[in-house]
Length: 275
Length: 265
View 1 (cartoon, rainbow over the protein chains, first blue to last red):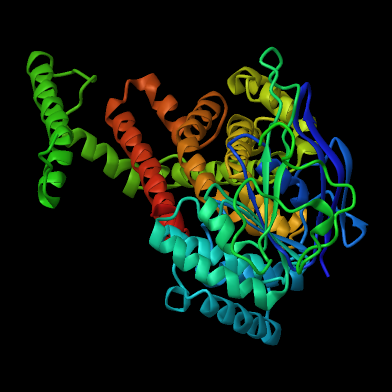
View 2 (view 1 turned 180 degrees about the vertical axis):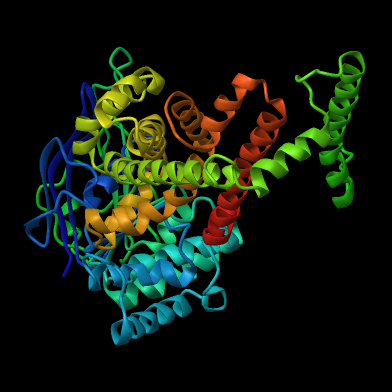
């Protein structure tokens, strides 16, 4: 189980309100795509779930317990860049996750434990199709391969939540398609909740079971920081019909289909200013 | 801009300025000798070779030691101790300041101030506190080089992308594990580079301390024979020190490339 509850969360930097009135129920095992214009707080939201940042107001719960406010092994992450360790080989990058867990002080495994960890790492590397590059350093890999390695690394500890911050943003369309084909079965097999921030709407619709759009519906030209972004669209992508058309969101109380929990006190999505 | 020398051409071009300087020296030395047979300022190569044979292969008449080797051993011991301790201090404190905001808030301003103290200005203090023996010279090198290494390494830690630290934590790493598995290996090439850059200052402090108070050492010898205007000894000594420093620099560069291949791609 790895349901995430966001209850009336505000994020402010001084006078600048970044996010306001964020209320979300993310069901365990959901694949949530987050879209929105640049600077609307998508990444801030992700960093908050990751534990890198704290909400100014409101609470975040992971399975009903308060979200730990520092990054931990229950939440894996893949960034757009700098996600892998340049000083470790492909194998070393995945192995290090097991070494962190198995050896508190030296972070080095020996003997049978090491062999078992290597075996697990190799199967992960194989899963993401990097078996042939096991002993290369990341600098010798292409951007797509580096991201595949980052994914293998992020799921090594079987996190309950996987956070993807524009993971495929820097990749060419062909490689991106390959990555989509890779991530979907991984998500299904691991049963984890995925939150993906992306700029690519097609990607957001193709991968997600739910799509959330952040935007600033109100802008005060005299005080640009006065109003923050809210959830403007919240689309269920699992229903039987075709992908919903932007602008048509289902009535709040009807949204109880698979991968979703009933909404309780969600912020008024969309209907107001922006449609 | 588009014309690059071949391998052999590169070597020839590198040697050219050295040959040129040597030629100018030989010609100038011969000129001065022609005017004044007693000239000591630019001794000819033959006299320098004599002096080298005297200091490097014949035991000293007074002490019975071969002075070049005892000087070299004494100086290198001081340099190695000083640089070694400074490197260790630089690594430990640089890492701690870079990784831990609490340590950084406490120590970074102190180090910033300490690094601005001109080490030569407190040499008398070191002589008074640590005596005229080996310790004060080693401490001078540590004080001269240590703060620079600390600051350089803490900057190197700060330059690591924050994503990597977060990523490590999201893989379950503790602060200690982040420090030794993620940060430490990545700043090692920078540490070696910083030590290479410190070789010059380290030699400067060594020679200065030896010049003022010592019983052996390369700097001591140079300043001793200066009284006799013995350029035939001073110049080979300077060349020898330069060669030693260059070889250390080269060895460190090779070591870094061999040990951390990932940093050079």
